[in-house]
Image 1 (cartoon, rainbow, N blue to C red):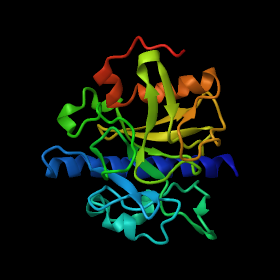
Image 2: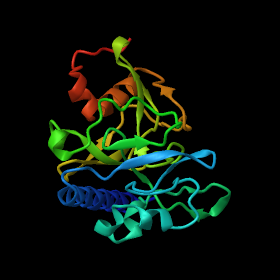
Image 3: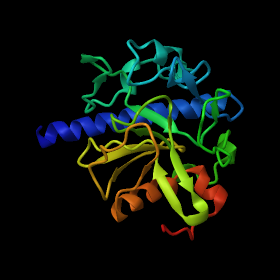
Length: 239
């Protein structure tokens, strides 16, 4: 791929994320400050977004765009194309000739809820409303996700903060020069290049960082969640 094409795809991805992030800001403005919900659960044997979520379904399995259109954010975006990164070449499970419809997920620490009986991460440090965000410019909202890792609606982590251990649950994409675009709650989008790639080892389960650089990458992400501000763990060191 030429550098010009790669750059154009990264710009288009960043624009998609900016549109999603600004749509989330508008949604919050119309809903007493509540973020677009991360509502998900295990239905029919796999994780998927459920009614009331910002988007429905599971990115690996969705056979059409109906899950996007039924999501609460679609009234603010109006275009299914912005839910997919132009550099995402992944295809649907069982349909190798059908591109997926979605490449992005939302920070799991924002207005998260899961169906009773569905195992989930500890979201006690999550926030529901925009006014609860300690630093909107420093907390990520939407992110382009690794094609092996994306599933339902939320981008999440696993952690044992007591001993300073953090794990990937979902892993970020690396489609743009070994880095990815990330949207933040104030509406801006930043590009971040990962210290360690490839992050292709992740398949829907808690994944320990594989080396020190990877640990620094996951810590960089954790620092940009409400969890970090809530726990005030600036002194946490990896074991």
